[in-house]
Length: 451
Image (tube, rainbow, N blue to C red; front, side):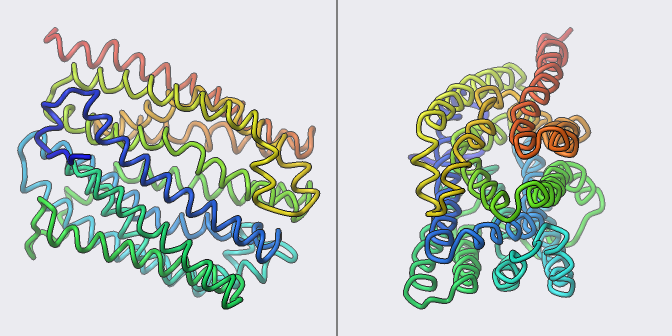
């Protein structure tokens, strides 16, 4: 698949651009999701269902730390896309240099805090009872690889902002293959248990970092000089305001994980935590094409918004929602039909095999409509509108799902946890759809018509 140069984001047909941007992004997310999925299968089959619960506790912590890189990457990439669209190359370079410094500094600080307060952090995130020991075995080695993961997440979004999604895809594929191979070696053959799983994960992050580093040295349009690494208050402020949307979302996801793990443990013990571990992996895996369309949407919308080509922005929004909604519907049908055999892949535990399929179907029940929420929030981020992007991004997990999980299980037990997911999807889609429609009808149309 041919790469797209930054200038072509403003000239090629929207359909062609979305395909060139979204397909590699989807493939990359697919491999990343398959990596996490297979990792969970290996852990469940070779170590036990308790290990799945332990991984479910640890991963939200590491993702929260590494999401610093994702947040700075997406926030900075929005600036880079619009700067390239406005032919302001120096601002794009200064932004990228500042992204690198901020990502590395904040990731190392977060890892040090995690190492100093590891037990307290694990307890906070739900490492209750017998979950604590395997969680600790997994947590510490993974922490050492998190700075590399943060730099990879930041660099990946910049690669897409340059219009080179093929390289971004490769960057996501490399750690997936590396982790799967190392899992087999460390868990199956060397019998290193949770430590082996963690070691494989950290080394796979480093592999990704090596490729990202190579790209920016030899393939990138962004050739940095030393002065680009000097932090500029105005650029740092803009990166932070836009990146805070992503970090706030991940922060809310972390809070959600804390509430979920404690609620599940109270109402169903370690087994319920393990069941959600399987469901959360399926959420990451099954929704990969919708997330890929969203990732492909961002640089196209951001570049054309920066170039003030609002007709193309409108077209990008419409096509992205239609494609993502169609893919989400197909995914929902597959989950509906194949829930039982899917669950059986993860565990031999009879209770998990019996209880997980119905919960899986409930969690995915409203997935056909989530495209509106994802693309809607992404538009405001691509356009550099930090406040509405933040609020719309937080609607599902922050404004609806967390309150529902705090309330419904008190009346309906574990069923209340699972039914909270589709209810939150529906409510957040209605809210986002309203604001996106108003933006398309009033703001974009108003500007492009010159009224």
